[in-house]
Length: 206
Picture 1 (spheres, rainbow, N blue to C red):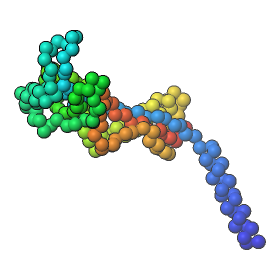
Picture 2: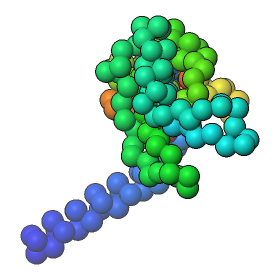
Picture 3: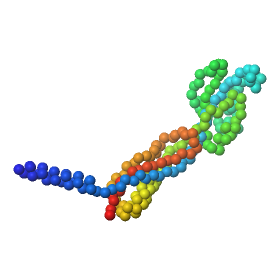
Picture 4: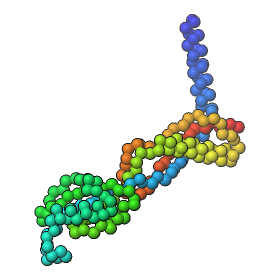
C-alpha cells in the first residue's frame, strides 16, 4: 500500500512537470556576429624549368635548369630573400619534352609580394599565390560570442515589443557556427570573415 502511494505521488509530480513545460512560453532567436580578419603572410608557388630552343621559342640558346635556378636565386637575393627560404613544394615528373623542372614555394610578407610577382627570368613561372592566416586571437571567440548574444537579445526585444510581451531569462544557448582553430590556414583571399552564430531560447513574460 505504501509503495503504491509513493508511485502515485511520483506519477503526479511527473505529470505536473510535463504540463508546466508544455504551457511555458518561449521564443528562439538566432544571434549573429562577424569580424574581418586579414592574412599575415603570402605563400607564393612557382616553377623553375630548363628551356630548350625550338623554332617557336624566343631564346636562341638552351637555358639549363641550373642557370635558371641561379638567376632566380640572384633575383630573390636582390629583394632580401635568401636561398634557404626557397622550399620544395612537391616533386614533378619530367614533362613530354623531358625538360628538367622543379616546383617551389616561398612565404613572404606583403612588402615583398609585388616584387616577387615582378621577377622576370627565363624558366621562372609563378603558378599560384595563397594567403596565410596565423593563430586566431584567443579573445576573438569570446568577443564574437558576446556580440552574437547581444544580437539575439536585440531581435528578441524587437519582436516582444511588437506582441506586447517582455523578454525573460535565457533558457538555453546553442552554438551553431564558430571556427576558431589555432592552425595556420591557407586561403585564396587576403582577408576572410570569422563568423559566430548562436540559437538562444528566451522565456516570454506578459
